[in-house]
Length: 143
Image 1 (spheres, rainbow, N blue to C red):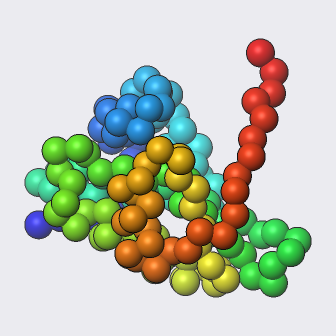
Image 2 (image 1 turned 90 degrees about the horizontal axis):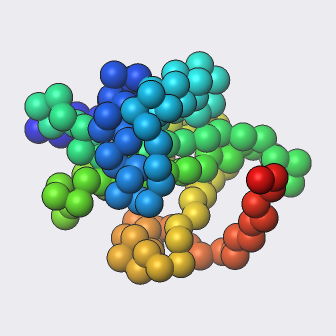
């Protein structure tokens, strides 16, 4: 059975491996520290989907206030299911947990971004009722 639970610093090795599947590099030490820092804010939880204690996926969230919206907004900042555990409903369980968390926090809506080359992910989000509504731009700063 899949359990959705808060991510803990002890999950750092799994977090590192999962983020690596999205193309992000983070050492286990860095992942553990980020999990500690994010857990401490009260607005940035990460949840893991685990089976028999083994994390198979994660979803990271952020709740923020924005001047243009009357209520807080929830952002899914990362979502990944281990490539060997996909197509088992784990992503859907993680999204469901995120939606509950956002509702409990009084959020007006949930948004996410997804790399342009992730066509399967885009189809998954559409299937769950997410709609395309903007184009994201970014500029790297510093060295």
